[in-house]
Image (cartoon, rainbow, N blue to C red; front, side, top):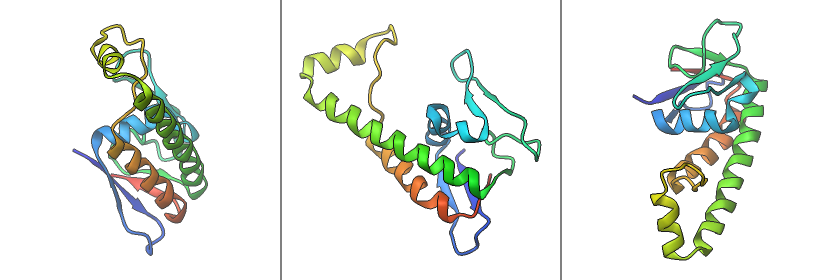
Length: 137
């Protein structure tokens, strides 16, 4: 099940995120402006209580203000730029080195994410400032 972001600005259309891309994006910094971040164990997260009592990690209609949406967009741009730089470095590695890193079970390596995730992050960064704030469904 994905996440649909419904803007307050009616001139902006809804923005759909996949369940994995939205959660990944939040865990990697985009959630910080709204008090969301990764927890101690894999797949867990922590969040600050919001005025509406909801969490953006669930699709229950949590509200994100226009100011928060703009902050999230700024972080999303930084995250996408970082992923582009990481991918460029990845491409310079030999095939053997990349395979060794992929096969490692130690979680020592930070591998670049799929390019479609980066495109989705950039699309969110372009959409969010125009949204006027949004609700997460």
